[in-house]
Length: 103
Image (cartoon, rainbow, N blue to C red):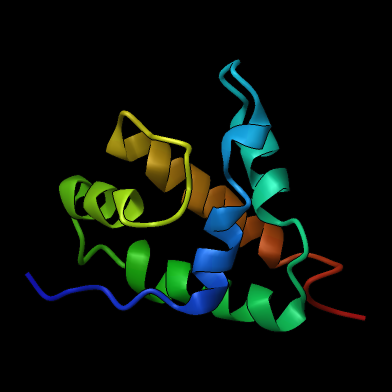
């Protein structure tokens, strides 16, 4: 398996997903909001491209994505690859909207 090179901006977003989210299972929308903390437009563009062109490209199966995720600084764990894909898709979609793109 070819290793996935994770950009620093993605790691920055993952660091936002620590234990500060709380003990209850947060919704994916809530997890996305935490991930967005202190990201600028440059971070957003890099993260969105990484998600779309690499992580959700179809080249990686659930096991590879979960292995990559477990190597990030995030404390949030996704039990199913489908849940991780949903989170990544929602994060990418959010980063494609203002204030991360546009005026």
